[in-house]
Image (cartoon, rainbow, N blue to C red; front, side, top):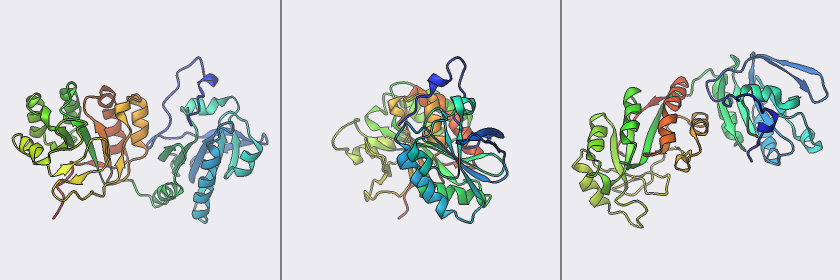
Length: 326
């Protein structure tokens, strides 16, 4: 559930919520009993933001506790912060670590937390290493904590992919962003459009991007892969990969075996807005992930520079998808 906290902060501009790579400055809050509590970077810290009038915390906090138990003996602190200073009786019983109140939502507004549950993992330098909106998986938090404690950056390769290419508009703008930042991408093509937007398709190939199969005509019940491959070969593609429309899974077009890439799908086709796209992607990508985006979405083009910068800050490199082996 999204917590609409704007009512607490009318009258000034809210910054974006913290994401991976941001730094959390020292802060002072009060415990729910009213005692001052000072935090500064010195140990890894899990910060869970909750509002106890929002039932989502009932699912979230037990998972935070599971992570705390799995990390017993590790130098990781846990804070549960009530974003408006209110606590329910069940919330008091379920809270993990030090229970803090942000009376009037002042500090949360200052750092841009505008939704709950929102969970941060901050390393001993104060840098956000993991961020999650919504009910998390305890294993994801434990893995991120162990990685941070080992001093490892996320690192590894990630893959930018775009469905629905070439789009009726916006192809050159998308290619401009990728070229300016020297990022290769993989385009899953609506192959009946290739001739109509031949200049953009040729440019994509010339600039090092891969062309793969999405459909012949979007939303068709059956895709003629051979027909798509024939069309792609005329532009330098070969169609060894196939991502059907409406699916996040990538298939070997020869064997129809599903490839085992983890997928990050931010639903950019729903136009959630630039800032929301950045949040959905930058804090959830892990090594080897395929980021599933769509050509022709202006918000995606606008968000790409920040997404690329944030992922590079985490130590990721961008590659185009390779042909399946065998």
